[in-house]
Length: 77
View 1 (spheres, rainbow, N blue to C red):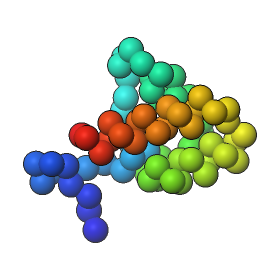
View 2: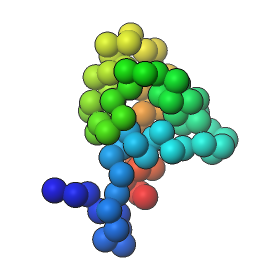
View 3: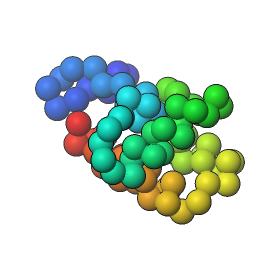
């Protein structure tokens, strides 16, 4: 099933949306920059797949907090 935004338009996966985030002025910028630099990042994954990837990478708590914030923004999108 294709996810849609509040206007019924197709929505990118959470990971794809995260990779598009730039110049926000918040800590989502930092995690998005790191994701773009990570060749093993699950580029079409959902938020849980991204968290599992971060867990494998032994990311710090700030990374998980940024993903939590990003997921809230993603669902508001």
